[in-house]
Length: 150
Image (tube, rainbow, N blue to C red):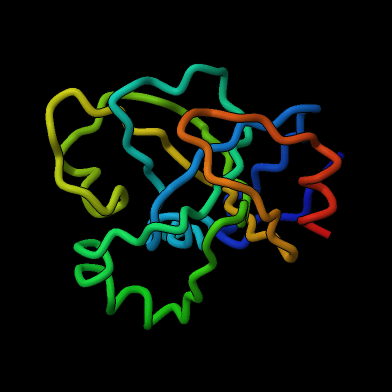
């Protein structure tokens, strides 16, 4: 399956695997990722796979501190929040230790021990997949993802 070019122009179009890992992010981070604005996701653990696709679930919970900090960025880009559903896909191209110059793209402050998941080729689903937010990596069937993209 060849996907259409990404909105961010990265041009990465590898095929979707039969199972796509999915993580849940609080808002506004989930929307910033699928909009291609937040290009680094931070975790205390490394991306456990080779480079590949990752589905983004938007949690019902909003990070209030981030909401205020990112308000201008969100309104300038006319981002609309969705909650309790998988809202898009990104490609994780690399994983490495987070460095201080990553702060803007990660939308967080640097802290020791964090890993930067480098994201590109963001795609927003036309039809979100309603589901409960995972507390760990869960997997979506490729058919569900293809339907959401169509």
